[in-house]
Every structure is written in C-alpha cells, then in structure tokens.
Image (cartoon, rainbow, N blue to C red; front, side):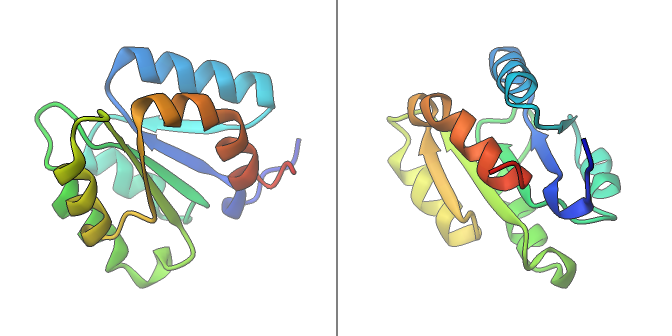
Length: 126
C-alpha cells in the first residue's frame, strides 16, 4: 500500500478504549493511523502534514483547545482536517472546540459509529 503525506492520519488520543478502537478499525480498513501522546510528538508528526488529526477533547492533563487553535494557525496545516470527539453531554466543550478551529466535533458514540467512514475518507482509500 502506497502512502503519501496527504493520506496520513494522526490521532492524539490517550484513552485506551479509543486507542484500541481506532487502531483496530484502521487495521480492518487498511488505513495507517499514527498515535501520539504529547504535543512534542504531535509536532514531529506534523513535519509532513497529515490529511486528518483526531483529537480526544478530554485528553488527560492536556488543554486541547489552545492546541487546536495553534494547529489551525500553522499555514502548512491549512489542508489538514481536525476532528475532535467529546462526551455527548459536553455541548459547551463542543462549541468551544469548533470556535478553536475543529472542523468537526462528534459525540463519542457518533465518532465510534462513523469511524470506518471517517478513516476511509481521509486515507485516500475511497
């Protein structure tokens, strides 16, 4: 399988359930997903811009909203989509994430349900 930088997907997720779910779904779909667990590792992965960055908006010990704003301010990431996911009861966080620059914010259940399509859409494996 050929990968170009535009078909890369980076996931900034530390919840083991979602790391496993994303990894397994990606494997079945034949899509490569690179996981990062801190901002420094994320910045290294962004040296060649991915097509999609997945961010758990409930990252432990992190402030994802300022990070999203910072990412959206980087000219080389203009073509990169940022998808955040939250608990369905966190409507205010969802709105703040959209204001910060998230292209899409989904409830965890909707994210899980639509994950195969999301990965395929951003992998170039249509």
